[in-house]
Amino acid sequence: MGKTYERIDGRLRAFIEAQPVFFTATAPLDASGTVNLSPKGLSGSFAVLDEQRVAYLDFAGSHAETVAHLRENGRITLMWCAFQGPPNIVRVHGRGEPVFRDDPRFAELLTHFPGIDPSPHGLRAVIVVTAEHVRDSCGYGVPFMTYDEDRDLHAKRFAREDDATLSAYFEKRTIARSMDGLPGVPLPLPPSTG
Image (cartoon, rainbow, N blue to C red; front, side, top):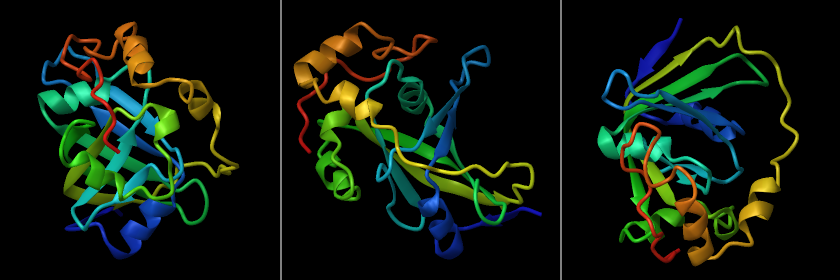
C-alpha cells in the first residue's frame, strides 16, 4: 500500500537518486490540450536540491511541451520506477519552473550537476520542481530490466552546435511554442552563462 511523505529524504532520496531514468508529466489548462509524458535519464542530469526541491537539466530536443506547460500553469509530476531490486514507484507531484540560461539563478543551479558537462547537449534550462505531495507505491507490475549505459547520441548530435546554430535549429522546430500554441523556450537562446 502506498504512503504519502512530507519531504524527499532518507530512503526516498536514495531511491530516486539511484534510478537511471525518470518520467515527467505535464498538461495545459485547456482540457482539449495535449498531455505530455517525457522520459529523462542522462546520468548526472538530475539532482535533489533539498528536502522539498529537485531539479533536472532540460536539453535540446525537437519540442518544448514540458517548458510550455510549466510556463502556463506550473503543474508537474515526476515518476521513478524500480526496474531492478525491490519493486517501488515514487511520484513527486508539485510545481515546476524552467530557469532559463539568462536567469541569475542559472549558474548556481548548474553547480548541483557536477558530474555532467552540459555544453555538448544544448542545455536550454534547468527545471526546478517544488514538491507538494511525495508518494510511493508497490511497483509490483513494473518488469525487471537492466541498465547498460547512457546513449552517447545526444551529445554527439548537439556537440557540434554553438549558441547561434542551436537557436537556428530551434527556430525550425516546435520549440518557441507548444503543440497547443503556448509559449515554449524563448528564442533566440541567450548566451550560456554556465
